[in-house]
Picture 1: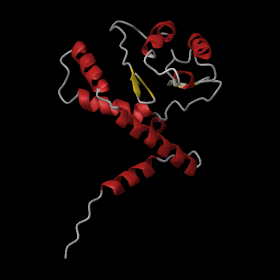
Picture 2: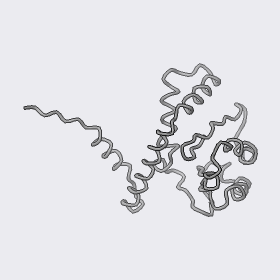
Picture 3: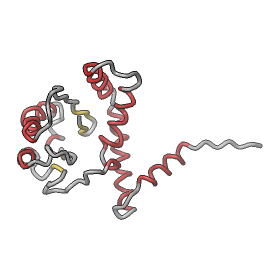
Picture 4: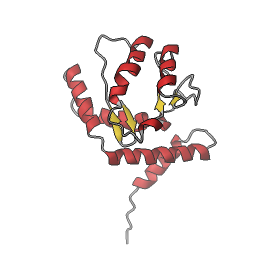
Length: 175
């Protein structure tokens, strides 16, 4: 699954018996990803920056070669020529700080009965993500970038929590 502008890409599910190897992931990049990106407007598609984590299949020479061809100077991850995105940076990754938590909360309101039910719940939850929600995610991302700069690249999660707590406080005046 991914986020491009106000659009959710996917989700995509591999069959149950598939181990994600360099070849499987590379096949996904060449054969499946282009189809998933079909709905991205033509004015946005050339500006997509593909971000991935440090999964061994993502860092393979084969996958990096495909990414260099498909997203020249526009992909971020381990061994990227643009920027090696920190592999453990959940405060900077919209999929981590928003999408996975949102989907988890929706999916597990009632426990899925089986894999098919789980997949259906994930599809429904991801389709419930609105453009307005994604706009707020982008605003949050920009706030996170600003906080990171203020902290000279250091940790800033504690600042996010403080600001969130202040925002949600209620005061009662007793006269």
